[in-house]
Length: 216
Image (cartoon, rainbow, N blue to C red; front, side):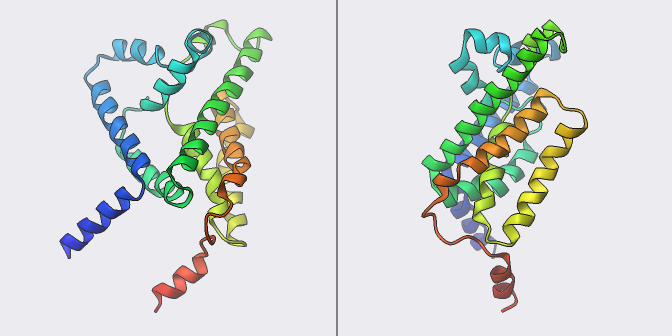
């Protein structure tokens, strides 16, 4: 039983190589963060942050580097999130299309949210020091994948899933918006806009059929 379960886990990991290679990188970088002093950590992460200052000087470098670090320092929650969302999307879309969704969400949501922050600074709504704000992490790509997975689910369940997603990401934006709240919501919309990448990817998952199969 134990061997079969282990083989099943290994087969699942192999079916989504990009997801678990990314998780492995995040594990290494998270361990590295825990070895740093708090002061050095902030300085180190800010140099890899997609803030306005770094984007204006090293856009490609920070867009790539920012997706390799977790500012919370907690890796285990991402194992669950990546397995539930990224792995499912990669298995369904294939690695190249899944990666395209991740890249589009990460890059476009970053540029849009930081652009909105720049407008706020220029308009006197935000302090000029916000050009150096810390903005790293993998959440925009994750939100984009959560959005595109809408098309993985068969109607009418699809619409319930979409409603929950829009509420979860829309409420923070409505209650007290920050540039990251905007980035997350935009990421979901980008994922939804990736519908063309989902064509010809097989039959949508129907929860009703799965429940019927489990009942025998």
